[in-house]
Length: 79
Image 1: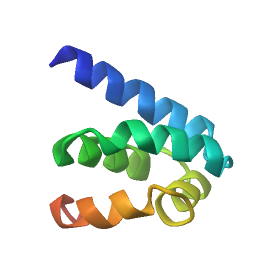
Image 2: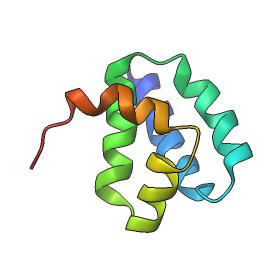
Image 3: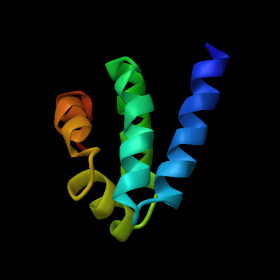
Image 4: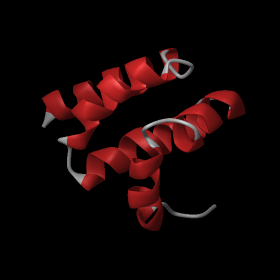
């Protein structure tokens, strides 16, 4: 279990780092594709909460991760 959380943490960092590179994001998405929905929620919620609007928009709306965002939205608590 600790391994998965470490993987999620590394993915969050890399996704934010490569937010302007859709090719790199596509490669990272391939890893996220194999995770369960609960880990996708952790990753995308962390990006939405902890990174600036530009990164959020690039990753959530304008990248290959948009499909995952659509999948996890029902699980996100509205503040």
